[in-house]
Length: 409
Image (cartoon, rainbow, N blue to C red; front, side):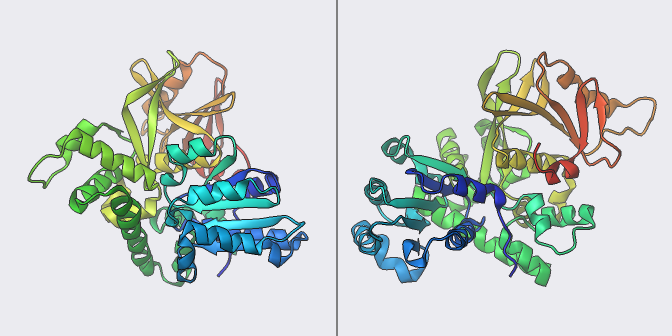
């Protein structure tokens, strides 16, 4: 199986090598966290680190079940530390260890330890743990493959449009790429395993949720409404097939559990003119469009505008932005992307072409809110149009595939 290099994430690990700070890699199951650790361990060995300086434990491996006792885990690691040299410790899916934070804290204070941990849900950095480790960790939020990473898995870097369709239809999870090469029909079985494992282990068991029917209906509703303004009230009013309508608090708790499992992401709204963050009418996006196809069926592919929006949203997260939905009076900007002191505005559309060459209503609709923004931050329209890049008084129109494949935005 061809191993896909995850250079963006790997470069972060390299930059923080030997720094006395805990490297926390979080992300949905099967997004490539374990493989990233393997790639990084190979890098260490190729750069002078001996194998006995590396301690690597995956807590989903039955061989290490006994070490899910935090005291036994600490003693096991303590006895393997290399005196006088740095020991690199990798604890994969550490949320399976009860009170793991106490072991992490104990290991951290040893200056000859370089510590890396991964986890598949947001419990890994719950408020309690974040408080305990304040200032002592960095979090690397890992996602399934970007389109650029997906393309790199193939020997032929051609037929980009078809590969993009396959990227959407057959999933961006790394293992799905290998299954696709063998037989795409097997991918749904793979996605079924991911979905059910997350729902049962990361959501129901960890959060004490017992109503599987309601949980699945909420998940499917959110996946069916990616890119639409959504409220808890709208979910309560629109979920069908229930004998009794669930309460506001129940729906809210289930959504938070899905967010913690990384099955969904929430983009809050931002008032561009008032420069304030809003707490209503947020939008939700799916972790993977292939998983959405699996859950909703083939007809879900008809909503290509919102699918494209979902892809751009995840890519902006990969590039380190905090992403919001822009409100400008009664107008909307698809994404306000913020990073340190930089802000970038994006509109996403399948096309900006109208049937009439003389009256381009679609282009005007996308340009209007961007033109009304009174600052000098970059503004883009991303589409699947295959014409050359264009500039409308400083607002740049880009082909979204070119944008996805570029080195930097």
